[in-house]
Length: 368
Ligand code: NDP
Image 1 (tube, rainbow, N blue to C red):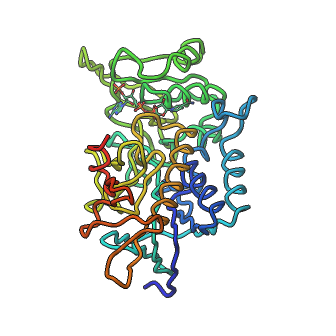
Image 2: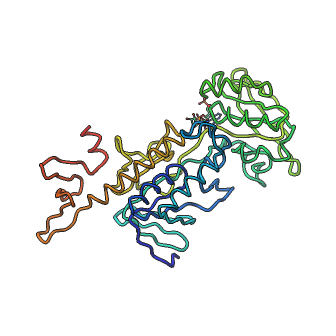
Image 3: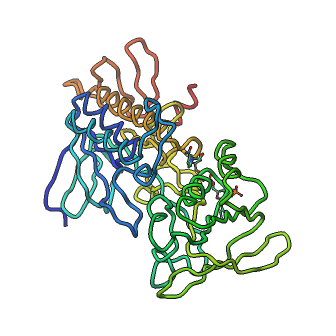
């Protein structure tokens, strides 16, 4: 049962590049944002700071010509958000009621009333769903199976051992290349005969003589023993259907991510995978006052810099939304600070010059 009530103009959920950039902008606009993030939990794959906290070298974030460590970059983001007065809270949000404003978020200790909400909850690693992959004791998850090479690769059990990486995207290439620092050999198992990864990442992996590619193949099962952890994977060639066992001490699953949107299911429009839908050229969701930024709404670019960019957009969108909120007049009319009238159904705002401004994503898309 929440014991304390908080009233906030801007609440941001998530502390990756998107959430923290939104916080920097909202704090500088004097909106005193509250940024809520889940406590660190290995099992639930939550880590304040987002996915960059489990990345080593970030070579493509502008402004760092020599590259920067993921955690170091996020530390800088956080300090910058703190500097302008962002308030931070680490709590699990159990429910989010977006049916009317203020939106209500409930955690163990707090009921938070938010005039605007910025969702920057990011995305989590996907799993194959095969035998042996589940967490210990059901499988070998945490005992040889991982979705994060940078977190687990340096562990003693993987040193000078053969390891398997599953996937054909940039993550798989990055993880395989990283793991060659420790492993005796890294096998990349991919279900097709072509990689999805960018050319530069492919080339890096192809040139690394510790990496061997196993094409047109799926991992059917992860094998192991309680004490020793993972000992092998059972593979199947998808063309010949031939099966074989490949000895290894670790399996790194790198097959993509899914957006963290369970809290908003049934309340916010999403695509079939669960990515939040935002209005054309803005971060507005289908609920006025709720904005989404970063990987939770981006299944295309998914970069730290684009996440930060949309975080900035979300803060500006929230600020403008608050500025345009209608004020009830003694006449019963509702007008905004700019002299605009709000339609009775709250779906549009009529400007002083008679121009109709959509107050809803679908209308915004049609207008363009
Ligand atoms: P992607 O979605 O790009 O790739 C996922 C890979 O996993 C694909 O090769 C896919 O195969 C394979 N896969 C998916 N599901 C399964 C399954 N059930 N069984 C077997 N294989 C499966 O995800 P990434 O995480 O690699 O990359 C996400 C985004 O992040 C990309 O935009 C990428 O560019 C970016 N990124 C950039 C980095 C950098 O610049 N340093 C580092 C890491 C990521 P298939 O190809 O057949 O669909």
